[in-house]
Amino acid sequence: MADILSQSEIDALLSALSTGEMDAEELKEESQKPRVRNYDFKRALRFSKDQIRSLTRIHENYARLLTSYFSAQLRTYVQITVASVDQLPYEEFIRSIPSATILNIIEAPPLEGHLIIEVNPNIAYAMLDRLLGGAGTSMNKIDNLTEIEKNLMRNLFEGTLPSLKEAWSQVENALEPKLLGLETNPQFLQLVSPNETVIVISLSAVIGKSSGMINLCLPHVVLEPVVPKLSLHYWMNEQKNDATEEEYQALRRRVEHSLVRVNVMLGHSGITVQELLNLTAGDVIRLDQQIDRPVTVEIGGLPKYYAQPGKKGKRMAVQIIKPIKEEDNQDE
Image (cartoon, rainbow, N blue to C red):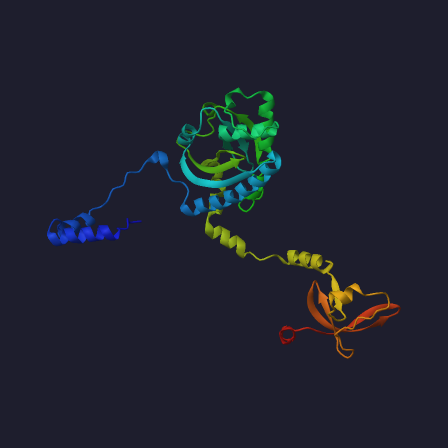
């Protein structure tokens, strides 16, 4: 997309042309010259903007699910949102994270390969402190975690996998993520080649008074089988698919056996608070309902039928006369 000039830049350009400082013919020749762009093969863009937007939508839902999960587990204020979605070489991702951090290694069949969930030390220790009964104070001691603390962190993040599965269900409903292990040194983690393009979803997390980042690293080689499903065209086609006849009949059977509340309005009346306080057994309250007018039958709180009151055996009953139309409600 070409750069858009501001009004001041346009005025300066016109002024230069009018004063002779700039030649229009030179500008024309310059615009006709082929432009060359530098291309970095190490930063190959494997995902389109449309696919990046789809990944953003998926992980915005994932962030909401994580907020609910961590709020319940840590019993404190938690807010997680998507900060950015970028594609970059795996080597650049490894260099960008701290030398001592929490790295959750995940496999997600039927996808081949591994994913990474990296938790910044600032937020990771706040979580650990809450799990151990503290106030959620952040203290960077990731490189000195005990086996008990590692197991607590492993169990905590293993519980986030159902949320990941639910967030990705619109794209791949057979996804079964599993936590393979937990690592604290990114230099020991070489899942793909250094120049392999990865998607990095950065989640901004606030837990109590501590804040930090949670980064998801999704290699292109892992997502390659589902990349076509990330396009907007695919999502729109999926939404257009109608329910099958079998699904329709199953839904109809469930609806037919649902219970609904039926009320019959025998009439209304208005009395003062003084009259209400003086009511005793045997008193009669006069209703506004005329004896020759049908009563209203309400289904689920909405007027649906006119009916005639009476008895069936020893029970009170009503006989449906006709349904209530919209114009009848408007006339009333």
